[in-house]
Length: 387
Ligand SMILES: Cc1cc2nc3c(=O)[nH]c(=O)nc-3n(C[C@H](O)[C@H](O)[C@H](O)COP(=O)(O)OP(=O)(O)OC[C@H]3O[C@@H](n4cnc5c(N)ncnc54)[C@H](O)[C@@H]3O)c2cc1C
Figure 1: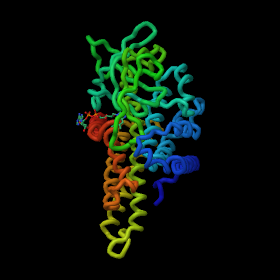
Figure 2 (figure 1 turned 180 degrees about the vertical axis):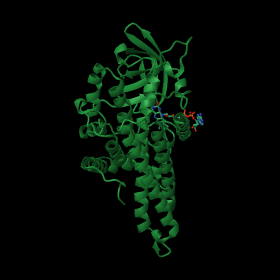
Figure 3 (figure 1 turned 90 degrees about the vertical axis):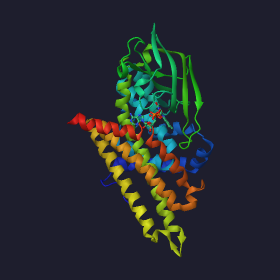
Figure 4 (figure 1 turned 60 degrees about the vertical axis):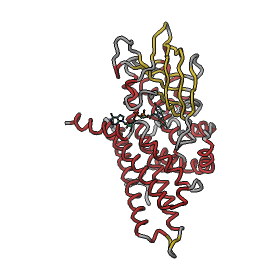
């Protein structure tokens, strides 16, 4: 099956090949063991940095590849097709912290962080969610108070991807005073480095899927952040986060498509090889129809995603289209992996076969960077905003 309805440029073909070869050589042989052991392989960060995968959207002056959004998503799909845990590390790093510093940071912040982030010397993370503020993230309660040349942060962050290994974490905290709350416009974004006094990594979560991606809580106990680490305007951190999540959701959609495509490829091969009633199970119409619907949904999800990416690169607002792309791709991943387990029968339920991990990994794409319910709210809200 051809990868896309539209032809890839020469550069896209090269980057796709590079990502595919890297994923097959460096990740595939270990993916099942890393999943079993909840092992995050730190050497991957440096290797991926050297290949340019951790600065894909950054301009060349910051040692980035400076490729367009589609090219980045093509690479991400290749990594996700082999290991969704590695893909989320790459997606969060590229789409959120590096892009936020590049877009909203001062020259000094860009100089200090972007080159090491592009090279894989510093991994990035994004800390918005809190124990009592998930979908309603603007209700977060971590407080930042200005004290001379520092901000002092107190609070707790939940479920931070890359949080235990990151060297730069964008932490959202309230900058409005408790007597005059300003909601979404009373939140700042701070670049937190783990060496700062008052920073601690809390619980490491034991998860259903994405087990090779560490997800941790952060404890901020009188965390003293130099004033120079505040990103942009102290009241705009939540707005920066929402704008950046428009891009982050494209990355999660690419991750979901990688998972779904892998499930389709494994199922196609298995249906040819597995024989029942004297013939390969691909001869049964019930199996053919499943495979046909899986292929159609993967192709449709990918087309929607790359149309959204092209719109972004043309400078259009993509709030609605990135929500659509993420919603459609994540529901595709869940549906396709469910069919894959069915095609594998009892073997699909066993950890010896790859579709079991794909099925577990797919679920979270319907939850993080905005649940499916929240994506539908965003899409519906934009319908009325446009009318
Ligand atoms: C593996 C993993 C990694 C993560 N990584 C990060 C990270 O790096 N950084 C970060 O900041 N966060 C991260 N998160 C958090 C993630 O973004 C949140 O889990 C997500 O936003 C949902 O919040 P919640 O879990 O608190 O669910 P809740 O908001 O409590 O929602 C519970 C249910 O209610 C529904 N719901 C809520 N509000 C509405 C509404 N208005 N209308 C209809 N339905 C509604 C939801 O859709 C969901 O079904 C991660 C989560 C996971 C699982």
